Image (cartoon, rainbow, N blue to C red; front, side, top):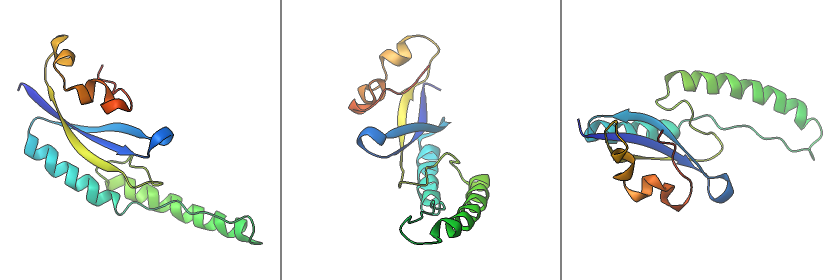
Length: 126
């Protein structure tokens, strides 16, 4: 095996942008299938409730909505392909191909987008 495929998730933009590794695969087709599975599951993630401080009594109603959300989120995460999927923003997933090796040349030959985070943020490859 000379290549590995890392499925990456990303969400947010500008100062709240973040990316995270989800899972590694030896086969490109398996990584792409998992990307689609993550995208489909992200469409069903329970969203955090909000409350309006201008509406009397809404804070108390929020507490009930928050408890229901917490239970739904735990149930969703138990079977989700990416339990760390954020619920405040629609994430995107993609597969990154990297050379597989135990020596220092693996990082040197990695695509520039991975080495330097595509201009956004460095991935932690160590």
